Image 1 (tube, rainbow, N blue to C red):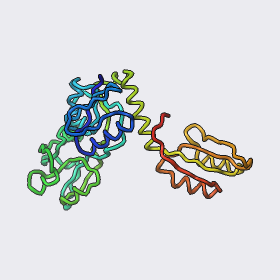
Image 2: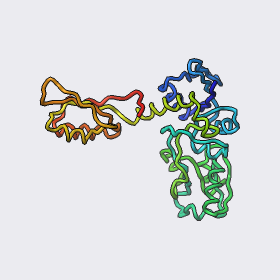
Image 3: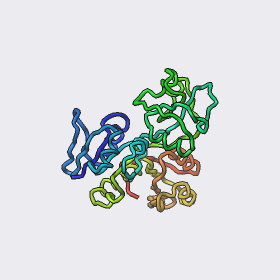
Image 4: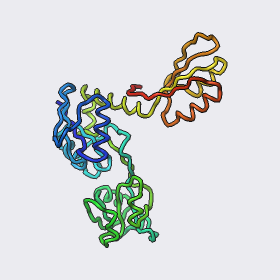
Length: 282
């Protein structure tokens, strides 16, 4: 039975469970269960601390896992990222006091507080800078105010917590992170049961990015309409009882749906409908 680790709490856990549910897997806990077995699909979902997942997968204890790219890299575990999951987005950045003019290349000899020491160490090595890393498990933002550090390095989402602590972000992001599916090595992706779960998840991810648009258009404007909604290969065009009109159906990027509806309406399209796609294989 395939064993997959998923985060036991937080936004990564919520996003992982929702994605797997949409893909047709039973992975919902009703208490504090460590393992949820989906016997119909031959999978056991093991709930672990997000920071520990890469270690278990890297040591071969579990087959695969979902965790943050930043957590996987900081663990130094021997894992391979096999699929980005497009949720849990964040950036890893340095922050200094608002009154400071320091930039990352000037951190030599300073104290840098972080919960991700390996990521920071790798970046400092790349910059050829020697600094002192202060490892903290949480509340990194207050370390400067409390005199523990001169600089912090942390995961940033909105940046509000950084500002509230009297800090500002400096330099380009050290890395961009999101939820990812990891495995002990790329070879596991060749197993049929793994191909199935990856195919289902990819279908959900595609569906989250696209929508389906349907509309009626006069045939004299059909060529222009098809340029606005070219679809994946080409749009589906069906005749209507009025020979001067046609019905068109095509996939569009969800984020562009309002602009596309505006353009279609301007050329005379009518009955324009945009609907969600539950799952999709391209």
